[in-house]
Image (cartoon, rainbow, N blue to C red; front, side):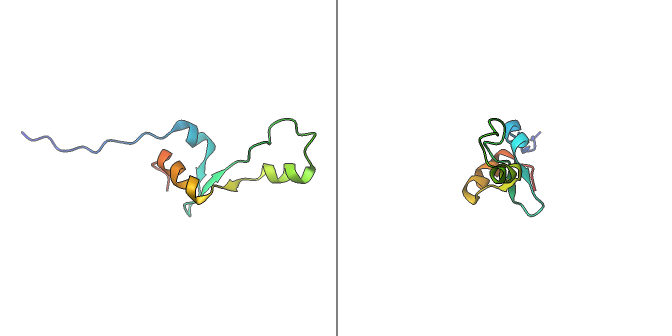
Amino acid sequence: MVKAKVKLKLKTHRGAAKRFKLTAGGKVIRRHAFARHILTSKARKRKRRLAKAAVVTPGDAAHVRGMLPYGR
């Protein structure tokens, strides 16, 4: 009896799953760094910009997609 070849499931990198989200269009979204503490010394405008999500650069996005194999 010949066994069928089974393609293994890939594991999602749990650290990446907590830090990145994929949009319906395939872009990778991340949060900004430097937005957690010592906020009194940062300008209001800077803190507002840090609060918003950002798109990961194309070079890094390929690496992140590898860690999130079942994203769209």
